[in-house]
Length: 226
Length: 226
DNA sequence: GACTGTGAATCTATTCACAGCG
DNA sequence: CGCTGTGAATAGATTCACAGTC
Image 1 (cartoon, protein in one colour):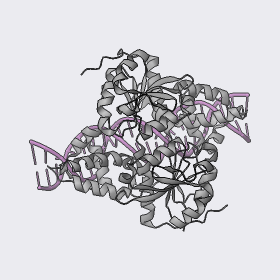
Image 2: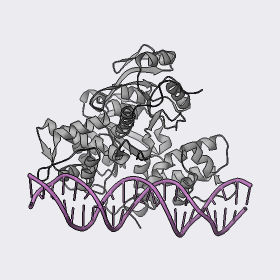
Image 3: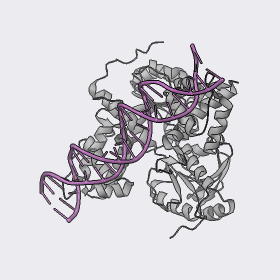
């Protein structure tokens, strides 16, 4: 047990699909729908039905033959698994373009995340209110972290500062860092780092487009049926 | 050949690692370093050296025993593979928080992406300049696409509008859509869709933190060595 | 000696095939 | 039937082990 590819007792690949299951399940709950089959979910999300059933098995959800899965049970089980039923506090460090966008995003509470403080190295930003949060100077980082006991940090500083700031966060007792800098962070293993590199998605798209350009697109532009 | 998990002749997993190799290789070139071993690269990126060698094999790079790989050759080969040596035009649809952040990001040109137009449904935004780009009304979308022959679109509209706008893009001849809406898009197969769901990374981090909370952290807060 | 390059082995994820149940 | 649940098979990714080269 406790293999590297598992989070607790759940494969990482399953955890990665949880957000889309949860999105659909919440939407169905909103519409008053009570049960759903693995087949229907798979169809909506472009997955095999058996994949859906395996995933649900991993998070301990059991369905009913003939009818399917209880929508409410799905929502609760997945929220529990991700801890998205309560809000976990986070600080955001680096109020540039990306940091500003994240501070302005209103959807994080549905994902169990509440940004409670923001910091930036630029003294001109200190005191400014961005997305409802007052930006603090970097000197206040450690005192604030120790006072608030925040478990998570969102790292949106410039690449040059990434490692240094991450180390400060680690020393101040941060448990998890959501790393948007694109730089690999070198930290003691008790700090959980999740890299969020937007360039990866762009690389996959670029490579697919390039591959198609090279072999010549069979279908000319513009003929999508209505 | 041409298996589903391949892009052209390269496994998707390899393509996903290309951006980090490229980042390091470009930085080394900047520092005037001429050769690098798979061992050193692996160490910097937290990968096994043999993984690095396999990946380079897939994109047709060959190294020299004893010395390693030519940094310049690495950069050129990876840029070619991703088509990141020239700029590919894109339109951005949906100038909300996220769209604004992406319009403000100056790093896309290094990733082969140039945003040449932006659109939003809100008439109040039309004519405003965001990140150097003048926002156009949605009615101008199709004429602009046909005039500019843009191959790519960045979709940052609200989830409710995602499918409808994506279909308009597809009908206007868009080849690839970078989809930030979190909604799965249902489009004809000649349109390449790359989903960029920020909630996935957050889910993995949340699950790791939750798993650790449950089994009780062995190490108390704050004792990171200097 | 210090590297690269690659077939074989292992590990992981997905898919198949089908048993079981209401 | 029309579903779920799961062992077995397959496909895919990584790692091992080592041959080859400068």
